[in-house]
Image 1: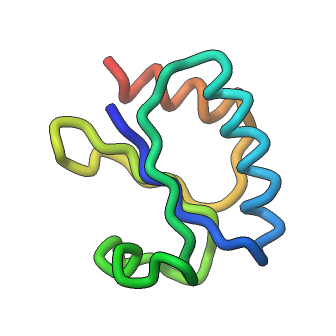
Image 2 (image 1 turned 90 degrees about the vertical axis):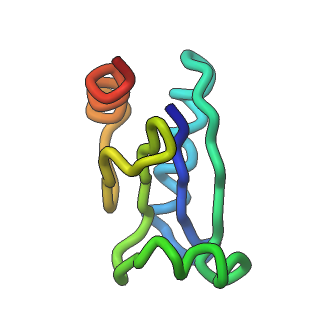
Length: 86
C-alpha cells in the first residue's frame, strides 16, 4: 500500500496533519508520495481534489481504495491503515 498525501504550505489543517502523519511514519513503513496543490499543480489535478485539504489517497495494487479529506486523529488514521492494509 502507498499513500498520496496532498497538502498546501498555507493550509493550517495540513500542518497539523503533517505532524500526525510523521508520527505514524515513525511507527510504520508506508510509502508516501507528498504533493503540494500549488507546487505540483499538474500532478494534483489528476486526483480531482476539492477545496478541502489535506487529502490522503490510499493506493493498493495501483488502484485507489480509500480517500480521507481533512483532519483526522492519529488513532483514526492507524485504524484505517490497518483496515485497508490487509
